Length: 251
Image 1 (cartoon, rainbow, N blue to C red):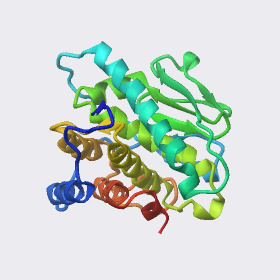
Image 2 (spheres, one colour):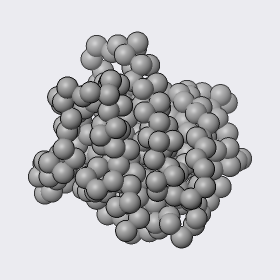
Image 3 (spheres, rainbow, N blue to C red):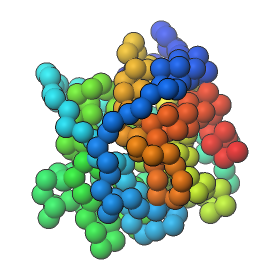
Image 4 (tube, rainbow, N blue to C red):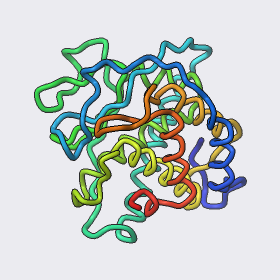
């Protein structure tokens, strides 16, 4: 993905992309590293601790372009914030304020990781911290995922920003399946940004998103708050938001 001028050279149809992604994943069984029990936490609206994404597998790195990585991080943050600023009053009451962006942290050094309440953020996680109203992502998580494709950072950032949005809403609007709802909001943001002309999908991004959900999905389907949901569930939620927009995440 990349930032783009208002006139897109190529704009994806979210419905077609969603159908293609589901066709690729509908019958798959995904083998991913289980999330440690300490990380299976309740969603942002139900706990003072951070919402977290499950840890990734070790991903072999190829050639890594640090400059492009940093540019994509900045673009993902800017595009996500821009979407919510642009559309908030069309969707919700009140005014929008962005969460603080802590950004990259080094989870290998617990003493330097950001605090969320009494805990420090852990390695290989991305999080929204309600008590500090900030979003942050472990450097190893983001770099290893980025080695698979740049769509990774856009998905992670849009998802964690979705938790920040949930924290700004009336409690009744936040689904018990808060992680799946955040996936839905991420899809709405990325495809909505493409519709706005602020973000452009490139060849290969669709498959990168499919691959990302294979890594971050739980082995078991969603059953209770705190679960992220299986890869197929998460991809369907993301696609629902991408095809139908933010309002579809609240029905």
